[in-house]
Image (cartoon, rainbow, N blue to C red; front, side, top):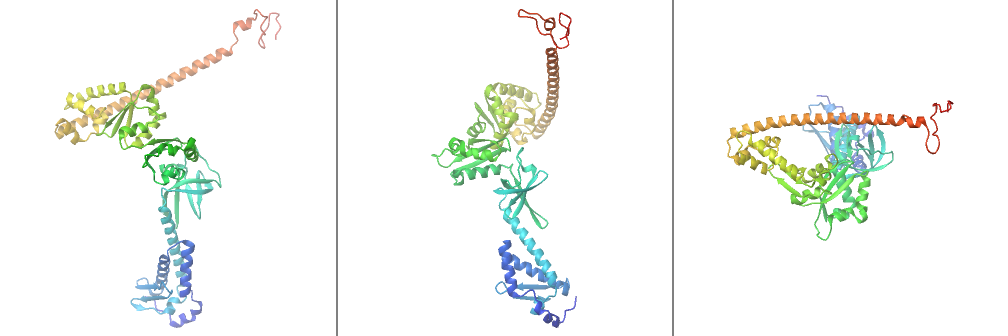
Length: 464
């Protein structure tokens, strides 16, 4: 244990004390106001700094207790149960160490306060100004704090300029050393929700509620809304007069298409709404698979599926169910194939095959993921029989996948050959059109001789 310094040293340094009670209170108050840090945290930081400073003197194994009076700023302490003189506490011994520890503790407290402040705002929309770029990552000033908007969290195709004001949601907040890293996003569904809340008063007031959002950023979003007041049309209120409300949201999202649909707890109603603008003939719900089979007319098939499957994919996310689009003819063909295929598996008779199809199982892949208990109950089967059936279904599903992949490969090859053939024919046609015809070379005609091409001799033998 280090020996104590004579009391005379403390008296000699009393004039240079840096830990006067009134100064402590002033420091605590200033930090509280400037850094928005709770006063108690600052007091605790100073106490910890003094403990660290005195431990250098008394030894790291010493039991040192320091307390600051929250009212008058006076300091009291003990060392291994023995009181420490106030002169020692207020003196300059260990003052530099105490200062460093205080600064560190205050920075940590400031970091924690900033982290807690923005952590509460995760998912909320903020507005900031773009200050600079590092590669494709934009740095955005949020008041006195900086946040980043990575390329991966930007809407595809959008770009920003320095000093441009943007809106985004806070996606993630985390501590990185002595700093707080705030990550923004413009691709999450929360941004669409916050924009709706800002642009549509009925949503902000709670009269209209957003029940679900499905989004493919930069391309299309589907928003399901419901009104608690029957007198208010939830869809019309969101669109606004002449579409002025939704127009502002679309512009903020860079032209992203937004479908507003009416929410219903009844899937028979919600699924057709979610698939708009396509017209739906029938919805068949397969409860065991969580799948909805939607029947449409042939002329509505491509509209229901959407470009690259976008419409049905978003509708599935919105409803929380897997949605499969087909015509009545396609469904009949799948039912016929599935019934015959299931019945060919050992342990499944015609009755069970029809019951499985009736529950929505239309492929070997569907059958391979059935719950064993459900299959045992449906067919009165033993556990061993069910295991054998599922194993057989898995094998057939794998073979079917291989065959489908091979068929896709052949189709792509045929398309490639067809394209190459068409390109070659087009090139031949263009080359033939560029060659002069015999009639043009011979000249003549009812209204006079045709002008000979450059470099071709006319009838007199002179070159034109």
